[in-house]
Length: 563
Image (tube, rainbow, N blue to C red):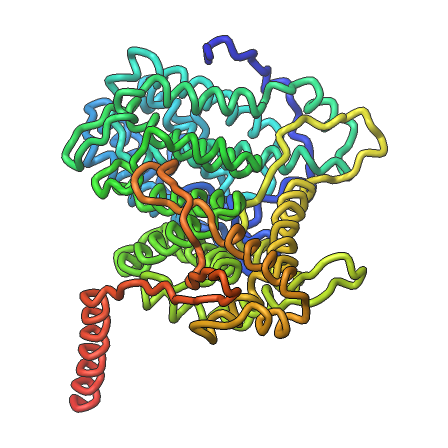
């Protein structure tokens, strides 16, 4: 796609329409409705800059309305970008920019690019990067970006991506964290605009006319084209798994991150197969892969990959992915304690724990990480039991568990789905449909859960766990059915508990394997023989965990004796 051919929007002619409460960019908590979901991307969006609230410092010593410290920062920032000093740029981006936002722009936006252009000699390359931060700050510090700001953000991303894909963009040097945040924020802006666009009820005629006359703004085709073009443009950097010491060009690393961004975007649209396929160029188990160098990217990748497997009913693969990323968060959480990403990482970790609980409830088995398993049952044991507690529905048409608990867990941990189509703004009877995509995804998911419970899988497993051998007739008596019906239930159990399991490596490296922790067969005399499938215990991990517990006890004793 030729980005330069994107139709321009004359944003100067757009009024600052008052949208009231239409534009909901709230950072919801995991336990409330939609959860933080993707409205607060890890490391970007709602968490990239300091939270809003409070007043800024006294702006004494200003020129042209810009405090001296901000002027000095912008001049130095421009200098480091021009000199391609990646280490200094990383410090200014990760630390200084956020501290200055906290001090001066907690409730207001940074100076516009027109205000700072004279400070950087009208360097258009730097101004493109500056505007990316400028609009990110607006989305972070206000719940009501104007339509004009949304349109301007779209145009700036078009211009920025066109530059980055050009020959001139090959010489640019940026820290990996900024590049990932750029891709993540781009998807977040699209998602936020799609949610706003789907709320038709309180929109006035002027707003509808603006949206109707500019359908190309934050259009799904354009967003997908941007990300796919980066992947194709940087195919050599994306397909080749390089080491941690390898130097990536901006185009290569952006292509790598765009592949992860495509996974996220396709999951938001409900196209899980396409999302998993987008990761084909990446070996996600490569511990020196580019995705491991940015914590937010690493967590986002595993969260959406696990969710995609869950929605495709590959519960074993989902469990393995969720366990891996939760173990990573548990190991590294101490390093993120003072990071601006800490809150978002912990929220995403809680969401992942909830999704793991759903997966284990539907596909019981021993987890490879004992610490994660203990915490899982401590936090969600009762809810997991309710999900699979088989009972006849009110209509008597199917068996189900406690679907209110399942809905609460699903809505609290799933992404904030979006509908990509442009609504009919001329329809006066149109209503808000921002929750339609989420409700549809839940409806599809719960139908599979109902089929699973109707096939007697959880009940059969509970009986089979009690025996090593049991006559088919006796098992049929326990279930209250005829022996031949029981036989069909056992065959159904075999089918339902055989799913795609992730074998490591590429996201598509899956194979059909038994997903249950109970294995059985029926001999010619109709005797059911059962054998538990045991997972080998990781003794090294066990001893490390126990050693840490002992060290903590000794530390507390020493502290008590010191007093």
